[in-house]
Length: 163
Image (tube, rainbow, N blue to C red):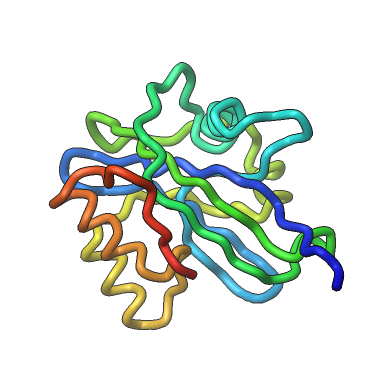
């Protein structure tokens, strides 16, 4: 049996005091999905270094203080033109004092090449409402996870988010 090629990735849950989170709209051949900023690790890169790089590239945040590793997600689905059989995401909490206007270091043309087409702040209620009408989020229960983060704070050990 062939071993699965799993891409290692890292994501930032940019979280305001009112429980808003910054999400990216990704356009894939299989459809649109909203997810928190982040992406795959470059060769030789650790999760923290990759997350700082992704935050600069996608959001424009420099020298951000990272919170704890809060969630994990693994999904098996071929992507990136068949280079990978799945992805393992590690999510970190990144508290921010308020919503801000993202200013990505990458151009929008470069971001679109990475399938990122929009950045927008969402509340858990907005996520749940959009999900109820068919909008896809990753992880699928993102609204509940964000709400739990607001009520209970970060988990003591990372939670498996499911698909």
